Figure 1 (tube, helix red, strand yellow):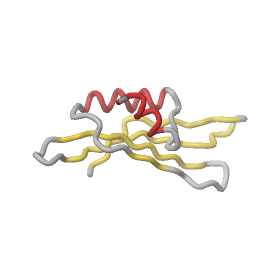
Figure 2: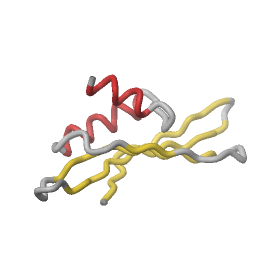
Figure 3: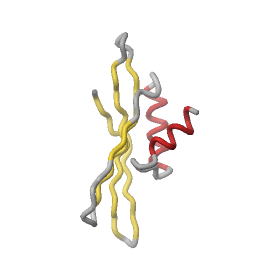
Figure 4: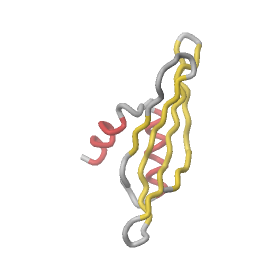
Length: 93
């Protein structure tokens, strides 16, 4: 599975960058060699001794452009690995 990193975001509190969030598009080949694109979010703590998190979806679309738009929306709204599946459930109904 190939992963592309279209967007990153830092979460800043009290002047310190506490978390680094990465929003990735995952290319997942389908059964008939048709590509499907899913999303993945990873987080990494920069200030504290905290564990990073990650969450990934299955293929949501066959359009790279749509996956890229969704990755940008996730970043703009500060979606974390812990809330990714709730947001995706709202999108796909």
